[in-house]
Length: 480
Image 1 (cartoon, one colour):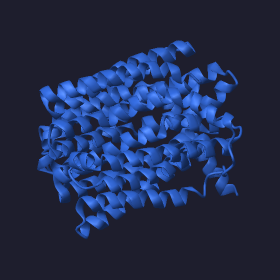
Image 2: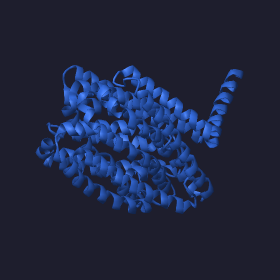
Image 3: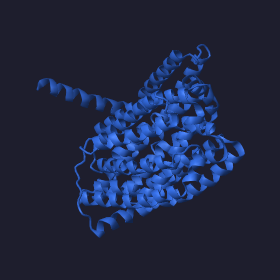
Image 4: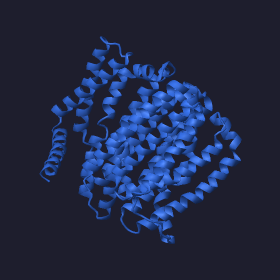
């Protein structure tokens, strides 16, 4: 498996997915406004919590066991049966608390919640099978199809006047279509599992559930608590800031998802040196986009939120900057966590996530109560920083490697140079005018990568290696 090729393909599909999501969010924010978007984000947050407990930690467990290469069909079937059983239980819980959930979300969406939760079980397991079979690039295409169909149907239904119900129905249709398409690319089939297959999944998932709990709460606890203390408008603003900052993690997820199945395979053969090399590279490339994103946010955040999303979202300026700082730490934390899970040590991540999850929940409630929705961002950056330090220290100790500080320092320095130049441009040019903002971002990207290429021999050699590979492939194609 060529990890560079697969990582690049996954990253390119992720970019397309992010572009579709970004354009869709611009349309939704301008047509629906902060309040309706807030209801939608609250729906997604509740859906995520129920999906987390329905999955009971099966995401990492399914990928891990399938990637080991034995009895894959039985493992996949056992995972699906686990999910369907827990889904039935939580669907009943939703029905029991239907009125409370409808009041919290701000609309009668509980029945839709059950439907989308059911579809999500099939969506998740197909994605996990693809990743376990080391078809991460196809998994990226799967995510793109789902996002494209979701935005297309949501936009159409909003145009027809359905507003929040159009958003929810479009989400469900996008998931359904992507599942139907994706089912053609998996190699496993339905086979009757034995008790040992369920036990194999459970032995891993009991730890990975805690790990998934921490990860999902980083993503959604802020919106959940904002919905409890504040209004839907604040949830909408925070959700937009959160989503925008998340796009800078695309490369980080591409790196982590590309190396995870490979790490899992190498760990079964005790190839620690190769794993250590992959981990070191992962720490170098995972923050490649997030670091300049943070320094760029310091300069142009206010213009982005006001110019692109509308005046209602301008108040998310401070929250976005704080969240961008959190993404810097999260980009490397993602890789560290996947490495530890890949070497079959989810219990080590579990300890970290148990502690940081408690800190995150308590901190978010306390800080949102004191500072409003900005408090959610502050709690997030503090929690992710603790998790980053703890998980990275654990991974480095397990593999006897050091953080590639010099290469990361080059990225930080290049981003600072970029930020200073873009800040200078902002004094001469109005970024509230969309073309000027786009040009400034483009110039900033060129400056960042130019400085980084000049400073980092490692980065230069990697880029040349990828270019040579592409050129050789094209020359062979011409010869044929």
